[in-house]
Amino acid sequence: MAHTDPGRISPETLLVTAGRPAREPDAPLNVPVTFASNFVQGGDRGYARTSQPTWDAFEEVVGTLEGGRSLAFASGLAVLTAILELVPPGGVVVAPQVEYSGSRTLIDAAVAAQRFSVRFVDTSSPHDLREAIDGADLVWLETPSNPMLETVDLQAAVDAARTAGALVAVDATFASPLRLRPLDFGADLSMHSATKFMSGHSDLLMGVVSTANPELYQRLHDVRTRTGGVAGPMETWLALRGLRTLAVRLDRAEATARLLVDQLESHPSVVRVRYPGFGAIVAIELPDAATADAVVAAVTIWCPATSLGGVESTLERRRRWSAESPSVPEGLLRLSVGLESPDDLWSDLATALERSWT
Ligand SMILES: *Cc1c(COP(=O)(O)O)cnc(C)c1O
Image 1: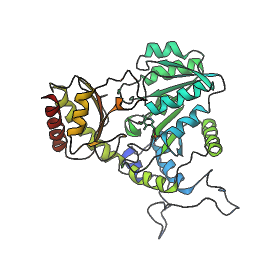
Image 2: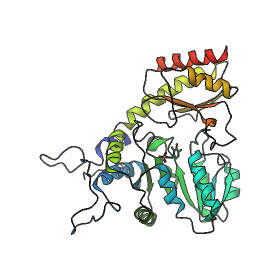
Image 3: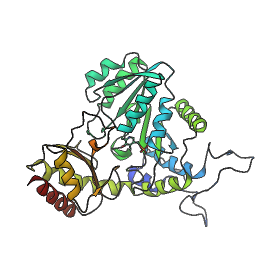
Image 4: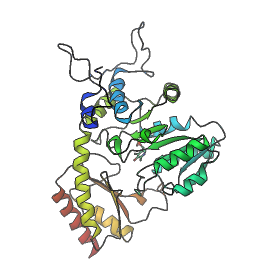
């Protein structure tokens, strides 16, 4: 693999240059997808649940971006499953009161099975977070949060966790590694649902976790091999292909998101706009579920669909899912801004809002 000094090179460049085969005559520019379950003995590889050359390339790119070493998983929730495996039996986890519903469902199930206990807190309040950390084994954070778009004061959280001897793991899916590098704040683990912005084309599920701590890296590697939540080579190859364009995709989507936020903030039928100031996810609160459903039914360019971070703009009313937190307003729409023309996106949304209002 080509070697780069990540300290001197910008993330935009690393996205393109890292994880390439060595520059030799006739070498391919891209690491080819390797479909293999096993490898001839005598080398470092054995069975492909442990290691795989297509993962290596993807993990190298993410690791250089994040400032650590990375491990690819089958999905974001496979990463969270592995992180929760680090909590000793009967341990204590601090988790957000409102977070991605799938993560919450996973944590609730582990608590119901008496694997560990959990303290749910408003992680956007450094005070509440500090109060909850004493005696914890793991502080699990999500920033910006899904779908409320609240942010965490990471430095305060990491400082409090250090004092308490707790691990800090951050789900930074909404920020992508270009807008937030949790390891820079001293977080132990940074994870992403690579299903979203990293891969960026709504065509696969994957997760990835990074750490600067070699012992944690090894433990998570062992968990991955033991539990088998591994990514397929084709998914990994597609995710790497998507990752190459992350910077341009995110810059464009974020610029459009800002334009939309400006328009939405002065719109008479929008009760509240939630936007953390960066990234391409916006949440708007409409007066009730019926109004929000009417907007979803009326759009023609925006796609009514769950998930986020793809080139296509999507929107959905989050409370249509029974697993979504009751603290999320019934009329909240989560918008994932994609790469269509900002004018088209705004006129489609404005027309839908107008129709739902009259
Ligand atoms: C989608 C999502 C996940 C789960 O990732 P999968 O790849 O769907 O398993 C975790 N966290 C956040 C913030 C997400 O948006």
